[in-house]
Image (cartoon, rainbow, N blue to C red; front, side):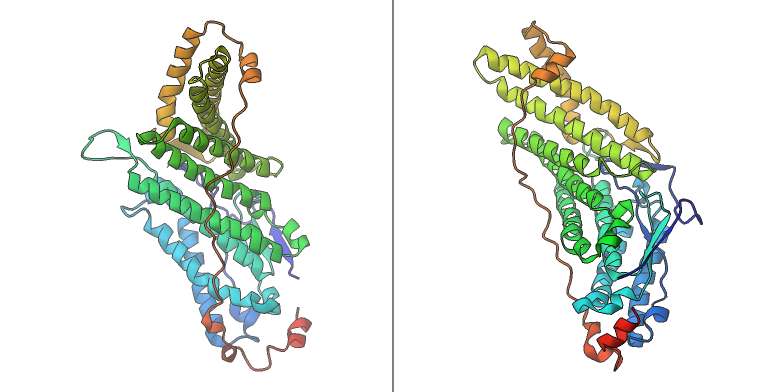
Length: 425
């Protein structure tokens, strides 16, 4: 059912990590890079030269592109005026390859066990992982497609100064809306990987997957994409004169749910290595940041009540928001200081607004209510946040149909006999 070969940490120097990834709005935990495969040696006795050469050409293109761009593709200097053509080209190469490589698993074909696929890891202690199972290749491709999409979103959300405002960097509404679509697309790839690809791998192979592809990490990345999409929606609601406090509170509470579930999915995984440690810090930072936003809007709504109790609860909620905001700034610093080093992009959107409003509004309410609580008492008495179901869902991505080049006449006569294939398993 496929064998596993894992290279120990730092054996051979294939894993190249940048010392710094520059400014970012979206965290991408490195790009797993594929290593070359000799399809002719593995499949030459079973398939026509046409299919073998097509597989080789498509995958070689990915190997070359990913190998060149992988160490630097998350850096903002890689952006183009159209949002990153290198990202789009590599993503297109993966989309072209996927229908062809899926032919190896068509109808449970034993061809899926004939090729050893090797990928260089980023979050796992093991430098690289090799598996003789084409579903591992499909899983790796979907993961890379999702990471490239998150990288595209990061480039779209980089604030730019326009000639009209001269000096205030901002992200256009067009870019923000486009980034939401990309986040949902990334979530769709990951959701498909968890629901439709992971179950195809035998239990023993699933246990041997690198932590980069562990179910918890895939689910956390999916939730991260949803959480960041909701963050963008909240920012647009803040800018809108039509959005009510109730709408903003709901969005902030949905963000909390996303990041809490993301943290729950990775908290027990061995993510203590480079990208992995930074990944954990990012999720923790965003979770606390989301709680600051949610408590802020919850406090404003409670303050609309006419009772002493509601005003007291409002103060407790706003003070909780202020404390969570202060904690989030410390976590942000820890995240940026973790290797590879990073920097926040110029402030914009949700947190630019809240960084000004939370301290100001909390201070104002505290002055009105002189019966102050200690920090411990605040956190004990802060009202429970409302529980909302997530309105945003991942795109319903489906694996493509097997490429037409896998028609029967392209497979060598006599090689489709299941007994022949089984004996060579």
